[in-house]
Length: 358
Image (tube, rainbow, N blue to C red; front, side, top):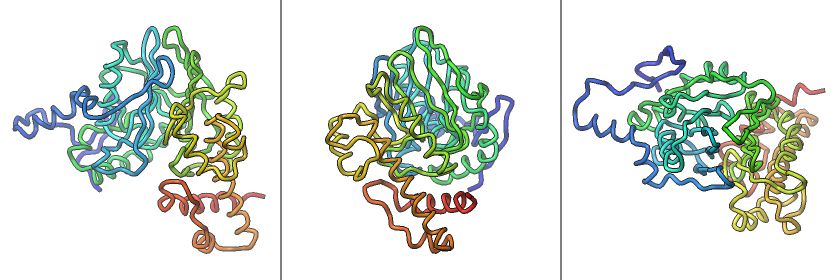
């Protein structure tokens, strides 16, 4: 998984084999055409839906990087103000970013003033390069830049190895130039976005975005739906912040639109209420069937899973089991997707953290 050229340029970005300006072959022209026309992506099945007035969402595939999905794995969004547009996450490749840009331009010609990354993972931000010519501010938690510097070469080489040269072409790791510490308001003209950072949870650089007009909440990967939650930070921290995060999903005791990092948003209510009867067997919140508050059910399902992992690992530690014994004896949870890929990894991460607690 080696790239031919890996270097940080003055624009704080890392490039993978930029298209040669001297390449005039038909093949190269076709590749160029493929990457520079976002409208073509929009016409080829890249869908967005309006979850609330002026708030648009694209639902990514639940899976891992593959040529078939082009890195389109995360939920993405954009919010249109009177003055400009904010983008929330850009996907796992330049291709996805270009597709998202095409979708935005099909809805508005307003300038894009902010591109926000909810955390450091590549499926959420490797599409940033598609927006460089829009000259936005790239917004992220203050701790994200360091995390990206450490991981960027691995991100790009892995993407090239999996997606192939053509789909990886033009992808860059764009470092944030608008760091957030705590909470900040971003003005889109007539509507504000509240960007809030959190203690270490899914990662050590999570942030959420909430729209002032519709109260729509973009949780990033602090909330997973269908896709098994993945611990890359702190299980204790994650469980600690979920009640506060869940409270943001309600305004005056009414639920607001919620966009998780992966899986269906709360705009898909009829179908998702049926599915939630299956995945949430012992909810910590309101019982499914007694409520139509889908967001509460979403948070309950995630809380139940993380709590079960913590309980299982603490029990193993109390019994003086080794990590290998704990992982091998763990039962895979039902009803979540990608369990085989991530559950044992979660057990390992929780074990490493909890073995040191008092």
